[in-house]
Amino acid sequence: MLNQMTSPTLNATRRSGSQDRLATIVQVDWCWRAAISALLLIAMTITSISADRSASRVVLTGADILVASGFDVLKGKRVGLITNPTGLVGASHLADLMHEHDDVELVAILGPEHGFRGAVEAGEKVRDGVDPKTGVPVFSIYGKTRKPTQKMLKGIDVLVFDIQDIGTRFYTYISTMGLAMQAAAEAGIEFVVLDRPNPLGGQYVSGFVLEPRYESFVGQYPIPVVHGLTVGELAEMIKGEAYLPGLADLNLQVIGLKGWSRSMRWPDTGRAWVATSPNIPTFRSALVYPGIGIVGESKLANEGRGTAEPFTIFGAPWLDAKSAARRLNGRGLPGVVFAAERYRPRSIPGIAKSPLFMGRMIGGVRIKVTDINRYQPLEVGVHAMSELVRQARRKKVSRLFGDVAMFRLIAGTRRLQKMLLNGASGGAIVASWSAEVARFRGASKRYHLY
Image 1 (cartoon, rainbow, N blue to C red):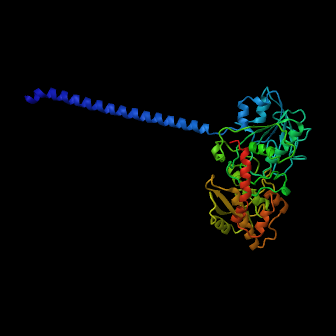
Image 2 (image 1 turned 180 degrees about the horizontal axis):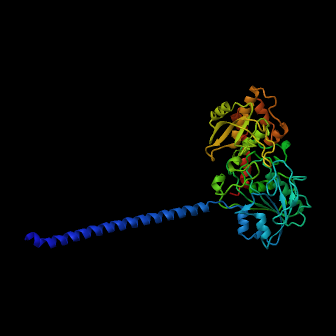
Image 3 (image 1 turned 45 degrees about the horizontal axis):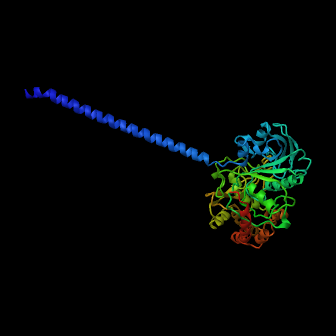
């Protein structure tokens, strides 16, 4: 009887307990859902902030800033533009944007080595013509003349330079810039440099300073092989140090970078790489170029021309690649390891028509950069040359330097060749240029814009 009497109460209690437990479960479930939603919201916010920060880290070039200003400094002026395929603003070429702008009159395009649209192989002459997209006359400054003529500049109010350089003295775009500055000064017209980042950064400076007797189009200024300046800074230094005559009264203006610092190498800029020439298709090629470019100019070894990534490998038919890689790894060079690899240089029309040892399977050493910021390209090239000369002598290779005159012009001195022939180690050669590099660093600081 008692059980019957108390059963409704117990049942009510049980129902109440079940409802409380259910309410608790629902409440806990709601709390978890709320917590998860909050975490998702935080994650989305962090992702958004990271994306914004990443976007803010993209370095803006002088061309970006010029276009964003509505071409302010060029309004109402007749413009001559020195550029190539690297002269991009977003996905558009600066020449096209100038041509389309109502307040700017693009009257001439001047094409450096490799041409305005960049389809000409290294060393091949560039021809005059008309740009089919804009209808603007294109004049070659890598053909009969490497300096703009007064005829080319006729009717021009301002000459604009916008080319991505790679920070190496013997890469010819900076020679083109200096000669164009001279031509502008002679014509009494303005010269505007749209600055772009130095892919190797602004802190790495290395190599022999060019001696006056070796001045040429592949070395026009008394600067180290790797100078650590942007093209805008170098333009200021060319004028300020009177590296070329007749520039004292040049009206020079540099439209600077935004967001670039001297510690940055190319990946830090957030910008996509555009091939600066047919044999520099990637940043990796640009990074190793200062050193392995010298290897190639010796004509002792192939420097990767005729492969998918020039300058990232070097080799020769007589090279014991395993021994060379082992010895180079033993030197503890920062940010790099070396690996033996066999490869066959091939003809690539418009890029490497006749590379050294074309069609032959040769022993090679692949350069594998492990730390972009620590890697020292010129030092690697000098150590590679030292090893190549050592092996070539043991293999009784008849000719160590296929083109002595060009090798000296590229090096800017005969000291490099002399030290290599005397059996100097890579470390000894590198140590020998330290004093002149230090002097250049002190002189160039006055022209730093960043």
